[in-house]
Image (tube, rainbow, N blue to C red; front, side, top):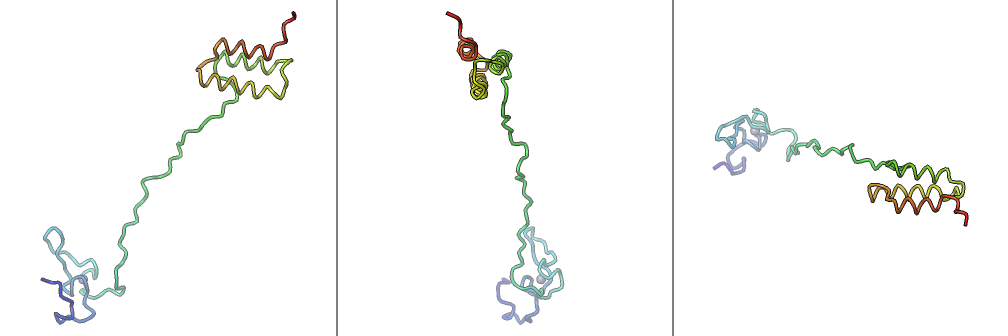
Length: 134
Ligand SMILES: [Zn+2]
């Protein structure tokens, strides 16, 4: 056994604390290898105490710069939606202040329904077309 303090074995203080001045240590493969503390000198390294050998791990978790970009739609993508939005935009009866909101509604409707339903188109047209003469 080699777990006695170096002084008990008559070693001098300058002896490497890891190999006890043997300059070599047995590794986990049952082989002897050059002492990693003194690098084979058998001398106590100048820096005693534990040298932090914790490997500085390179982060493999780089922040991805491919985060999904939520594209802010400003105009409907479907043909019907685009047509309807054009009607809203060009409407003479619809208030200018209401137009962005209505176009937004079209986009929202289109997003949730996949397209503009006829019911929605009719409803929207009622809002933007001049009232029928009665
Ligand atoms: Zn050593």
